[in-house]
Length: 258
Image (tube, rainbow, N blue to C red; front, side):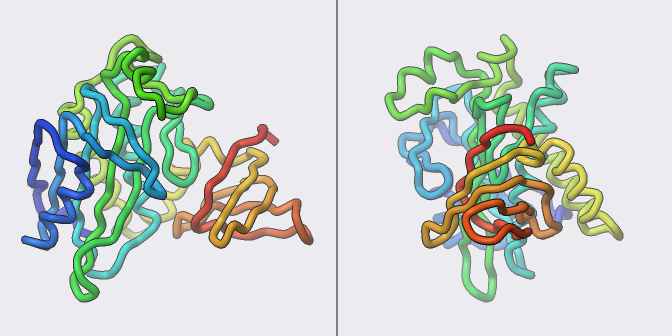
């Protein structure tokens, strides 16, 4: 993944899903770094195909990224970090409250205001990743509550802080931060520096968690760190014998601070 090529920015008034639009564009003309932003989505989706409600005022976007060396799961966290840092920088000291929850959520305490997801597109010889970004930015709390499927803990930047950057401003900042992080990642020792940056704002570390992984495999233990590949390192306490393991794909719930 290279940060050398400029981003092609596409803005739509409304679409079913920017992920669907990204897949269509990659199929027709691959190899282009695009940022596809919609003011509204009628059928947005989150991780595991969950519905994602997309009222106007939020950032609903898909990045199409050619990955000739294959997808790198760590970049999911880098994108989440770029989004977190971009919004935090617009909030001054109050932005320190913004954090990440592994594997893909952006949170304020136990309240979720955004998320990212990744889907594979392209071909086996020319793979691309569709990175979806959904951020509740300039969205009133009442607007969130209008959607019956909206989780109770959902929030927005405006609801929490009284103001928010616009989706257009946020996207420009995210792309700039992401390019900077990618360039850093390609430098000597850059992956370790980026890993530490993610760990610093990853609220999951230091918590007792429950998780449910592939094939409904469950566990409980303490999250202790993040690997260079983006896996969550945990000290399992149950079930079975205790020991360290790495979660590469799982749904987790925070229980308490250890």
